[in-house]
Length: 284
Ligand code: PAF
Image 1 (cartoon, rainbow, N blue to C red):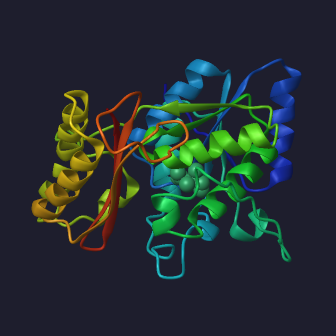
Image 2: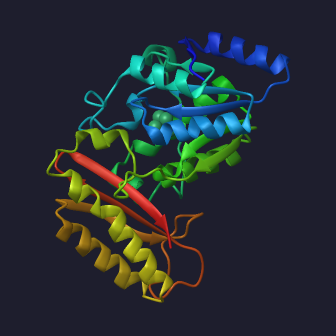
Image 3: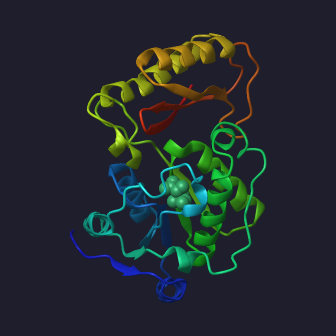
């Protein structure tokens, strides 16, 4: 049913609304996003509606998770379009703070998560996860939802958030939601908007290469061989560079022994195509 989601911009307004719902014994779901919403985000909102009485979606392009050379300024922003999509999904409240409302003058506290933050995107984008962990901790404390929902496309981010929630005793359930994909399997991402018509079919190869790697691992291939072949296949598909093509433990994200799998594993890739950096992952 189509309705308009109310928009609040201050933590005080967010807390007042959440307190009113709590007073009526309602469960609250939070879907943190940076806006530029697509079907992947909307699937998180739908999951929120299944798991709670009220859904809050945050729209905040968080400057602290972008390095100076990254795409903070260019990151797609479309609050009116996002609000229309959220209204159509039955989202109850949009929290869209300004940078100043999120980070008051003199802001001096950063949340860093050792271990799971360190490999892969943590190595390729050194300050990224501290920015993510800090803003997600703030959002969780600002809203105090019963459940917060994140997409598995950013699987490392999800594990970082699970870790900080445990370590800081935050009273919230963290729920991961399956990756949503285009018809050719390309994982939905706001950054897919950067792809040119010529790049789009190349981007669609990434998930095919991941699926081949996962199948090879299940068939008994050695981790070292699958990583090397995956890296070569991504380059051969037309990507300019590959930040990583890794097979890792799905919980700790630790590297695995170099031979055939002896337990659960997930394959992770990050690669650059023109001005777009794409990431994806798949269970083996
Ligand atoms: O995944 C995202 O969109 C962002 O990293 C998040 C979790 C909203 C934090 O800014």
